[in-house]
Amino acid sequence: MRVLLIADDAQERALLTHHLAIGDDQLEVIAHVAAEQGPLAREFHAAGYDVVLMDDRPGGEDALEWIRECRQRVLFPPIIHLIAATDPERAQAAIEAGAYGSIVKRKIGNRAFVNLIKDAARLQQRVRTAFRASPEAQSAYRFGTTVIKGLRCVRPLAQSTLSTVYLAESEREGRIVVLKLLRHIPDLGDKPGTFDRFLQEYDIIRRINHPNVVKIYALGVADDHAYLQMEYFPAGDMRSRLRRGRIAEHAPRLLRQMAEALGAIHRVGVLHRDLKPGNVMLREDGSLALIDFGLAKQLALESEITGSGEIFGTPYYMSPEQGHGRPTDARSDLYSIGIMFYELLTGRKPYLAATPMAVIWQHTHAPIPALPVEHARWSPLWERLVAKKPEDRYPTAEALLEAMDRLEGGF
Image (tube, rainbow, N blue to C red; front, side):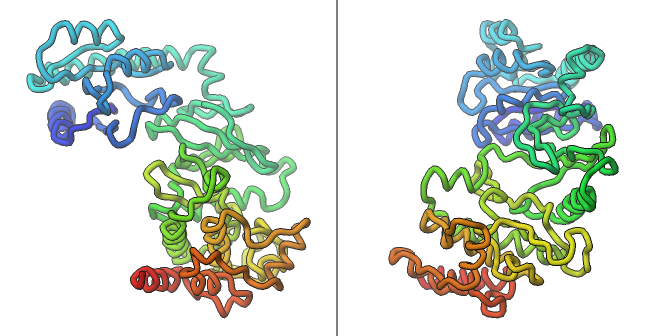
């Protein structure tokens, strides 16, 4: 049994979790701290939970409004309202709003409390079973022509020739996730290597546990279509953030996080090879995560997946050696985040031209643009990041971070 506990006070969360653990040691409690995490996402139906315990003032707001709104969501579990002191009128108002029950927090009797939760959970299980047998369930769990049990489709996000990306709710994870679904059955017309690249993306990321690398929750196959279930970023990507205006004051912090992510990636023998603002996702707490390793390559292996000399990536952020199809290493990824650093500081790309090949030519031959005078202190770091020859750049992400420490220490 899984319980979603919506409460801001840490001591109260600990007490409630303790009561639940005594009553049922198989019960899992997941906390949502509204004061820090905000309201539940509109797309979130808590379908992976059996019961929701909700404090009377989640995030300082009125629980009755939350209860009314949440009970309009399909499959949302029974809500048990938690109140600070005996207040029959408030308890009745909560039940009228849609709560399954209302309990005074400081008068929780262990057995009665756990029994109420178990009764609510049994109700939710009956509702869930009935829904899964209904016609509506077929469309709820359908992604294009593919049905994936335990994943509710919210809406499509993007598509390419390789895959379609959806926003979904995972009952297993109990959260909103991104689902990346391979669009075609691998042995019925995909280009050679498509399925291999898709599986390689998962195999790479699942070995990396770092706050600045996207979290991968699961790999699955449904109706002969492979899919990845991964972290969702409601704050969007760096590309959309740049479109809203310069964020120069955050550029050093974001560069540092990208470098730390690359350090983790490179240590397991992986190159990203497609670093660009659209592949840098932002979280609401200000942190970032690198995504989309579909072009990544094992450093230690002679991989045949991408073919000899074939160019992958985005010319605006591509190192000279990658643009010309020559061998690449960690310094190529560092070049790409250097280009993004310039764009974060100035609001524009350093190299622009009418065609992709002309942009690639500029990366190789054009002078390195100078930073504006207000950012001149970063010039030594910028110029070394994007040196034309790999041997003139920082050799590793760790070397870049050390250089940033020295520069920032001198300010």
